[in-house]
Length: 273
Image (cartoon, rainbow, N blue to C red; front, side, top):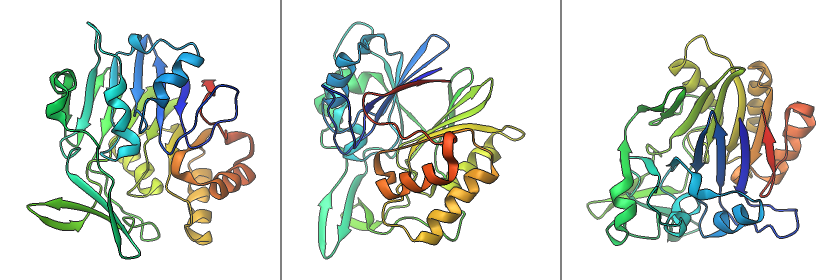
């Protein structure tokens, strides 16, 4: 398996671009999976610099319906072999962030009806789907840890009524690698520990080998961050790659406590298992 970081909040190599977003290309057993597309064409431009041919993509997975994960999809090049797209059925629900009395829309900034090729290749899923042998999507993740909880400030609008967003549409990509489960998460909105525990329930008897994820740990309490890292240590996760919304302080703390098991990668980096 090879993991290529196309879009991240950070970039450090010449010619690479950064933006608030996430896009990762995964190469596994002759299958190429594009996990998220960032918010613009940055993923496509960075792929070119990295020498990656996105036309060889077999499928696209959209982790959840926020602009910084799905906005770039309209820039994916059209071709005869346009890939299948997998997303949760609630992906296009109107989404908002409310903070300090202000409200801004953070959902997908384009309409499905305006892009026929996307609409024709879109498959909406539910709680669990196996897209290929050993490659699955898990959604509707319950927030089970009291110290995490659903993040505040996220709302959805249905029938002209705004309500707290439980992030039902966030889905994980889980690959059954020979070394153990490899988990990809867009933002871990239900809480990264809750997400990890959910995977273990969905795949009983399996060990988590690697976690590649945005973890929404920026500005969380020191206790929550400490408990999150301790949980990773308890699960003996061998490879942790914190990306996107994890936050630079949380990344530094993970590197401090996890040592060689934490890889502080960013846009332009690739790693092989």
